[in-house]
Image 1 (cartoon, rainbow, N blue to C red):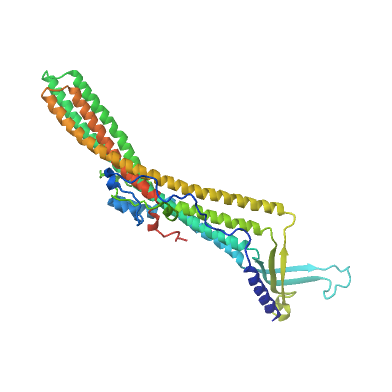
Image 2: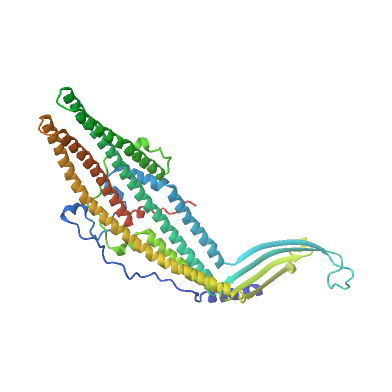
Length: 487
């Protein structure tokens, strides 16, 4: 009964003490003073009404890639979310952080060990009277439990748990950031792949057209109406255009290899599936950019930096608590006897319980330096957080201007291609009638090929810039919240 009485009083005292304040700074989410109210890009012009990125009340679609209306892209995104190895690594880091929290929270509870021992000893016969023990061989059997409990008076454990919780949230945000980057990487490589394939097709079509022109020049030469110079110039153009095809094919193959790896497959696994030429996926007509303050909620890299700041702040409290005394409760309960068969007797029971205190004296310089280290790390985390926010704003602004300007460029190139096609037709007709020099035909064909190639590049860039804008706005990670479920 006395044992239970002591334990009861000890637990009540511990509960009262633990409810006290924790040393160190209490975390407050930083308030940014220079957050702009809107993005700095001017409103879209009449020429870019279909490329609207004006602030909108509704957020961007979580599954933004579906707005490109490309089933192959949707399938690649789904496979990457399921099998990408970088994403699996990030999810494992979440599980690591959760397990680390379990180590920290274990300090809330007593350390209890089961102990047992046996010893045999012999006392000296020359000492004389040994009290209740006769000289000679002695056996001693012991079994029981030892317990030690640190009472968290100054919040060292509580601050450690705060840091561990923030570490988990930072790991989750990091995983979401990996997913966000993965979605953008898959979409960008897919858009580039289709663009390279279209460039190959355009080059092949132009080679075919140029070879027809070459045949025409040879016929005219044989008829005495042409010159060797015209034939040589046409042959040079055909060869130059043919030389572009292997380069585009190489880039297309590299994009397919990259997509295979992003989906967790060997590099050549998707070649057969992706090799057939498909159009460059067109972006949606509207991309709501929202307002800059929404980035604090949308972008996981900002959330990660903010949670890392919270963890660093909590660790200042952990280091500060080491400057103060540590109070512990220790206790033992067990049985001991010089005969194994007597361990079950009531008279063999022993127990002890009592408080302890440990106060650092000669190592306080080291402990104060540890506090200074954590304070410096917190300052670094503040700067990292602010820099992450500024970088995110820069990425959005750059993506906005790139998307809008490339849209305007694409419209101009579309008109240029239409004019070049008409120029080729007219120059060929005039040449066949003998009303113009053959050089004009070559110049028109060269301009057409160049403008067609630039148009395809621009179409690919418009879609790629749309992907970059979606990524900069922090969209996509919300669709997948299966964070580190595999233990």
